[in-house]
Image (tube, rainbow, N blue to C red; front, side):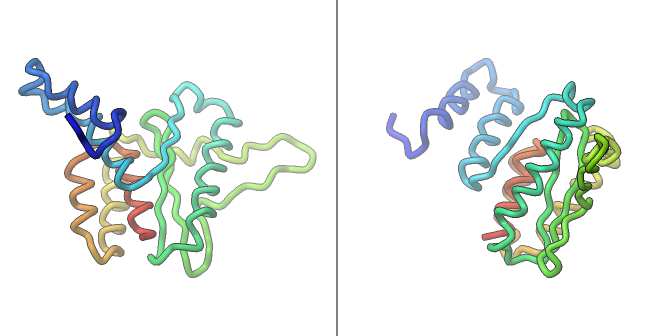
Length: 177
């Protein structure tokens, strides 16, 4: 069967389309997540929850988020960009404001003499599985939809995927188009 899509994208759809999954809607979550990455050219860096206790891993995640904002800042056409950093289901929410180039939460500079925590665990206060975490994600989604002229594309992204990161990165990428 000839297809436009690469094999890494089509294979999960073929697997999900087996008779034993005929009534299992969750079999399609992974394939559609992969499709979202392909369509929106998003990036995803996964950190296992066990690494959350390490200051260095939290700093690395914080640095990556700030680097993503630096990469996108010259092409932003919306007032804000949102970002979500996740360790397992623990979430930290970031925001870049175009007019001021401000990123929140603010970065913490290294102490010249002492080892200090430059990405405190308290930043990851929301849990994806708690009501507050879900509410925060929905608030970000509503804000991005409001900022984007063509909200229909983003509504499709949200309705197809229930996974956090594809939505977050698709929204970040879509808001810079």
